[in-house]
Image (cartoon, rainbow, N blue to C red; front, side, top):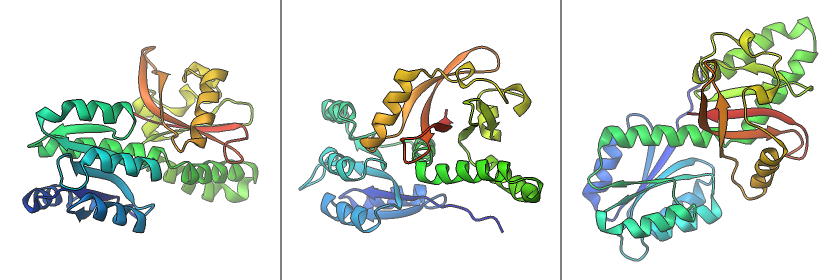
Length: 263
């Protein structure tokens, strides 16, 4: 039976009715935790360190504002994505938080449930895209099975199916720096009809990569952030910008072995 990964969302607001409304909006799709203040939210983040994918917090709360809470979370758990709920009068504070990287985006209250769900879905994809440990294992397993002969062909087929199940684009790079594999989502995002259209091509025929860009990605790993916007060339020749993450062998020190991207 296929295992479904359920992501956890933390919602923070001092108003019980708002907490209840957010919970009801999200619970059909995600695991949801709630906190009524910043201190409780930080305790939950600490207790469930690697489980919280997205935090949604109100700005105006007693004791600790939403932007102050998000800044603390950003310092200790930078991979966690953050949405700030705010009133129109708080826009200056919101912009400062965005400029500092403390939040990913903001929404005005009252929020639109459909827009909120779409925003959370996008941030979940970014969260998954940022999981270089998981994806390095996927890429390494794929590379190993390609070199161990026909005996592992059934396993290779299972691995390909597994990679195709991800709702983010995945490109695996061979030892020569060429494109070895695109998953189904990657082909769809870039409008390619089949893997044959890109397999064996140089990376820079699809991804705008040079030494400076690759160096920037490597440097970001040391700061706990792996995502950067990257120009990608689609099958029709048009260029699009997507949030992307590069994966490397040997904990970021070795050769480039994969690219993950999401529209």
